[in-house]
Length: 117
Image 1 (cartoon, one colour):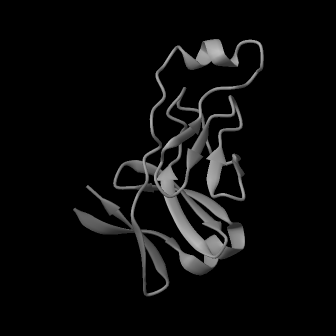
Image 2 (cartoon, one colour):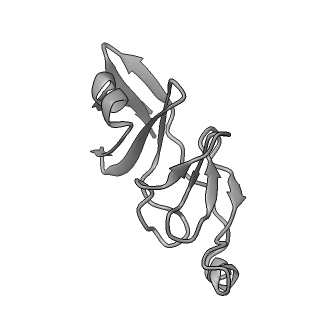
């Protein structure tokens, strides 16, 4: 395992979100409630982008496409494919509920780093 540079902390604080390729991993960096989060940039459901997903008060990200919801601390599924109401649950059965990959982070010299396995 190795720590790799992801994004400058000041830039992340200004932008709030940033997608970066780190060692072949597309990672979504999020600045929320004075904390840095790093998660896979695509929803595990249909691999659609999470960059515009809503961040909830209890630190979860909601996929903007099918409303799957993932805990930013653990990656655990809080809700799986509820949108659109009539077919969301059916779409949820296409692929079983999978956790969102979470990357450990640290700050080193104003650079947000992620641990890559």
